[in-house]
Length: 368
Image (cartoon, rainbow, N blue to C red; front, side):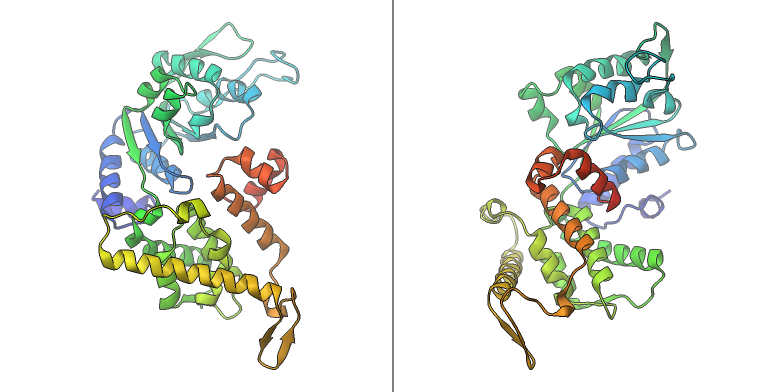
């Protein structure tokens, strides 16, 4: 199978050199059982590449089991991974297989592995080296044949230096490392992703008249995208859901980008000097336009605004601008997650909700 067919078959969207090079590596390593470590910012699509590796391997007919290590409380993570026997702890009313047993013969994808506690890392390393473990409360050794793919938005080498990640486990996992670039570093892929998410939305909601203007495309391709591909998908879906005529123009996206705009710390960083002058000028113009739009919207909420022959009092928007509470809540959650680089504990604190509520909302709004 050539690269283009492989990308299409496994839903990898992109024509940039970075994506083409990654796909070449994926096609090569998929055939073996070597461990793969995938690194990239939140929202770059690490799970897509994990699925592609599994689908291109000899284990494709077996299970791919995905485990979000950051979403499982520390106290039960070991039980989730390795299983337990009846009565091994309070609440263990039955024996249960862990993810390693469930994935036997297939692939185990350990997402957010940088969040795994050190005590669990020790046991994970032993399983990777011996392919053996014991369920909690059991004296029987269980042997499995599992391929490991791990992913993290943290730099695990830096975590090793901070003594937050085991050095031996890091080197055991990084037999092959895939580094997925953020969306802002592969802008030539943005238009392809826009078309893909629009088509996906149309097919899912059975609509046919959704179009995007050239000016809107220019705005989206120039935006910083701190939340990467995940953020782009949610922006497209939100704009489409709020559209009344199916035409996605500048006005459909500007409020959403203002909501998701990068933090002041990011915005004020020095501009990279390895870009062409025309690219730097274009990016600075786009950022300035986004900031102007944001300032105008804030002023509109403070002072009365005349629209046609109607006068809007301070703080009151027209009926056309009323946004459903579910959209506001979804945007607030995504904004907090992007601001904290998907650190759910910090995001929950910013939102003044519990972590359990945040995980439930992430699942409810399909924020992946």
